[in-house]
Amino acid sequence: MQVCITEKELKEYIAAAKKAGKSIGFVPTMGALHKGHISLIEESKKQCKFTVCSVFVNPNQFNDKKDLERYPRQPEKDTELLKKAGCDLLFMPTEKDIYPKPYTRKFSFGKLDQVLEGKHRPGHFNGVAQVVSRLFELVEPDKAFFGLKDYQQLLVIKDLVKQLKLKIEIVGCAILRDEENLALSSRNALLTEEEYDEATFIPIWMDEVKKLSTRYKASQIKARIETLVAQRDKMKLDYFEICDAETLESIKNFEDAENGSVALIAVHVGKIRLIDNVIL
Ligand code: AMP
Image (cartoon, rainbow, N blue to C red; front, top):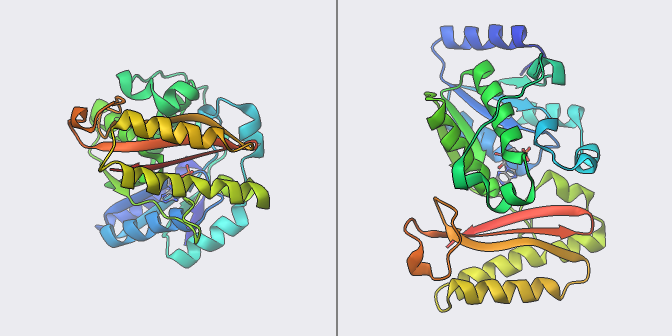
């Protein structure tokens, strides 16, 4: 696996791969890699001849400074994991490499980024769009792979590619979960044992949502989940919503969802904020 930091090195490696006729698959990450990230690398390797992974903790997408400070960083371990997974090129830029000048471009995604994560983390998706558009400009991939774990992000990125008229196919990949069914996340490493046990209620609730969705109204299920979360001392609910799977407009009745529906949750377990979702 080749490793690079600067734009110049990156472009040389990519140009060589393109010259050899290889299709480029790209997996952007913020590091502290786990099997969820590796599953994206594997999908890229299946679909493309040359896989690039970036590891960059993007300060622009953190609305909470403390969250940015405590975000786990493990560059050596990440390098080893990517080598083992058969990644071809690892791009580990510094902030200066990504943003040589202050990056002030403003993106707009209409209603899509005003709900859920967008509402609770002001400026988050603008920061995501800034880094992803910059990374796309640098890597120029044929396909880019994103996890359904960050469901709203996936929709925002698809919209970004449309807005910028980029010829990049965005591939959504299934959520990977641990043995307790908790969605894998770099933030899980920050949970104490007790908090981890609490967090395992999240996938249990999401399973229940799936079952209830065949018999109850969306509004009734929302009320049920809000009650269940309120009963847990160590948890604080940011949101639980059942939404149209494409517009993310929240629905009261499943018949109102024109594009199918998805249930999304964000909960603080102690100081750690976790998200999950289930397509219904
Ligand atoms: P992050 O490093 O958290 O920014 O995530 C990088 C990419 O990995 C994003 O596309 C995420 O949606 C994806 N990802 C994170 N966790 C998982 C998971 N448990 N299963 C599948 N993909 C994931």
